Every structure is written in C-alpha cells, then in structure tokens.
Length: 172
Length: 368
Image 1: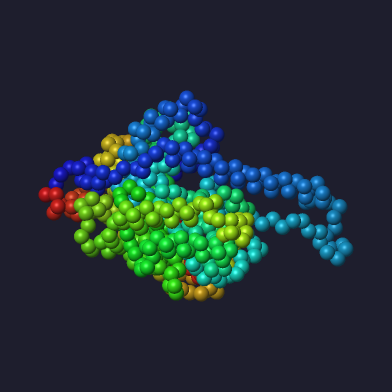
Image 2 (image 1 turned 180 degrees about the vertical axis):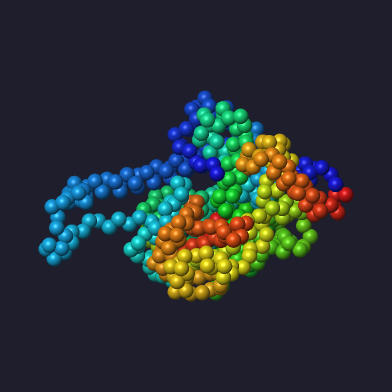
C-alpha cells in the first residue's frame, strides 16, 4: 500500500513544467488503462486525477525514481483497491430503488471486451492491462503489484486464456 | 483471435479523459489544500480553546480541586470528537456523542439532485418545509460548511417561495411529466439523477452513460436540447448565489445530524466483480458480540440490513473500533469498515453506515 506523504513536497514553479510534460505523456494512457480496469469512465478519470495529483505533490522524489509512471500506476491500483469505490457502487445497486442493468441484452463490442475483462479475477485483470495496455514488462508489473515476475506470467497466462475463452467466438 | 492489444483498443472504444485534465488536477489540489487548512484551523481552534480552559480553570493540572468536596465535581468543557476518525482527506463521521438530531425528523421530499453535468459532482435534497440538505461527495460541500462534528451533510433553510422557485424551475424544462431515462455521451460524467415533485408524485429523470447501471442499455440518448436543459438545472441548483434573495430563510450552514442510520453488511468475493455473496451465520459470527447485540436492537430490514438510532449506530461503530477494525472514510458521506474472513481469505465483509434522511431513505453516497 502506498501511504500518502506530506503535502510539503509541492513542486516549485520550474518543476511544474516538467511534471506537466509527464502528465500530458501519461494521462490519457493511464485513464484508458483505468477505464479497462474499472469499466467506468468517471471512476477512471477520478482515479487518474488522484494518482497523478499524488505524484505531483511529491514530484521532487517521484521524478528521480526509476519509473515515475510505475509509481503512478501503483498508486492508481492501490487507490482502486483501498477506496473500494466499486463496492460502494455495488452496494448502492442493492440499496437503490433503481432496476439493475440487464446484461443479457445486445451490447456493443467495446462493452463486451470490458465485461470480459471485468469477469477476470482482479489480479489477472491488473496484470493483463499493465502488460498489454501500458506495455510494462513482467518484472515491472511485479514491482507495481508487489509480486514476483513468475507470478505475473502465471496471471497473464490464465488471463489470456480466459479472455480467449470469452471472446473467442467473436475473434477467431 | 487478434492480439490482446487490439482487443483492448476495442474495449477502450476511443474513450479519452475529459478535457483540461491538468487544470482539473490543479483545482483538485487547491480543494485538497483548502480542506486541509480548514481541518488544521479547526484543530488549532480546539487547541486554543483547551489552552484557554487550562489557563482559566487550572484544567487537568490543577491539583487544588477536590471533586465532590462541595457537593459537585468540577467539570470542564465536554470534548465532542467524532467517534469515527476520518482519513486525512475526509472530514466525515458519525455525529459526535451528544449531538442533537436535526429537526424535524421527517420531511416531504420535493426535489433531489445527485451527479454531475458540466460542474462538480453534487448531491442535494429539498424538502417541503424549506430544508435544503447538501451531501458531501468528494468534498463538494458549500463553502463555509462546518467541519466540527461533520457528518458529511449540511443543511440550510429556504422559504416556501424558495422551494417553489426551485421546483418550478426544474419542472419548467418539460422533462418531468413522466419518469425518464436518457443516455449521455461517452466521456461525460457518469450520471445525473433528478427527482422532482410534480403533483402528487416524485418524477424521476436519470441521465447516465451506457456503462452506468442506472439506465437501461436501450434508453434513448438525450437530445441536445434535453442535455442543455439538464446542464441548466445542474448549474442552477449548484449555484445558490443565482437564487433570488427571497428564496432564503436562513443561509447559515449547519451540520445535518441524522436521527437514524442504516447499517448494511455486504460480503464481497475478493477476486473480480462476481456476485455479492449472501451474508450467513459464519460472517455474522465475525462481528463482535457487542455489535450483533446492537443490530438485534434495531429494525431488521433484511438479513444483512438494519436501521438503528444514531446513538446505537455510534455504539455499534465503537464496538467495531474496540475490535480493532479500521474505519474507512473518503470525504464521502458514508463510513465503511472492512475485514477479511479468516476462513475464506478471498472474501471480505463490509459494514456500511448510511444516514437516513428526512424522507426516510438511507443514503450511501459515492461515485458511479
């Protein structure tokens, strides 16, 4: 778990531009990865904003890391887990007097992919998105997720097989 | 099968983050700093009061006092801190011990809005008696909201004319003759839900992105005119400075203290978004006995859902605290506990606290 650090590490004016370049380079890709992870644009945007802000608040330390982007990805994944926002949403599905969505109907191909991803165990989904969307190596993903690279490869193998099973008819 | 990258590109569907990402992040930082200053100010004020008390009364260091010697113990000020300590970013919790529930306890809902449309994510409720309640979502409470003993909800008071002004402004869009579900475009905020009283009934309108569970997949997209009208409603309701002065009876922001809370127990599998599992006897047994005793005192709404008085809800939370559970609060008006089932480490049990608003509905605020 990444613990929030002091807010005193706010970048100086000169550093803000360097961070802005980093932001522009990573923002969309991070948002899209989180969209694949969460299936919700609003959630993805919020997680991306918060994780990038946390990097900004301590940019003097993050920028000298081997992989500042890895720090942001790790923060985003930790936020996604620890905030439990999807669970709040699901709790509201139970509590709210609004009909739940009907998943049996015809849906767009993009929705099929996100739904297939959503059906994967979280660990497999995270590994797949980090490797396939963010182009991280197994070793880098291992550092982000806090597991060893062989475990990452195992998750990738199972995740790919599961996705293939779910989407095979459409793609083969 | 095509390669996974291609599949994922299809899954992304060209989705892009909302515009002005860097500027929005800077505004987020500013809000965060402001909230921290407010919190620091409140703590500083409390320290100041404590110092005054110590100087003027001798406080706890005055060994000359002999409590009970003259028929009554010397008493200092009552320290009323929230039972549930919020996370650094949050300022919410259950009401402080001794906090009087807001009155009247019950009210007739006239207007409700939750969600975003070209502005901040907002939650508000307007009642026939003039009460206006704002809910904390990501810290978007009106400026000046009290932080001491914060519950995540604040209230103001409108005149009857003010209530009617807001209601008719919403109704006049022509969108509230019947319940309506509309889709909004990709990349827009997740949802906007509005309920407004029209005649004897509350009419619903929900405007949400396709992925949001609130609208059916076959809902029609909002026309540009409908979208514009909904953005106009959101802009009006989230900008009280645009309301006529005659709308206000009392603009002072006060903490809304619920008289009751609903406590929900939900069991979630640890891997993936599978179906919620039923809460059974084994999970029930994970709760401290002192906590389950309190649940039995409440109204059982279903096997995993109870309504308690605020005092009992606080005592229930204290029982969880004493059992070593850490509460979660994220600047939203809902407090959660979570713990892992030791016999099924993949599963987690969550305990949610949702305040019951005057119209009788428990609210579990959050995005999505």
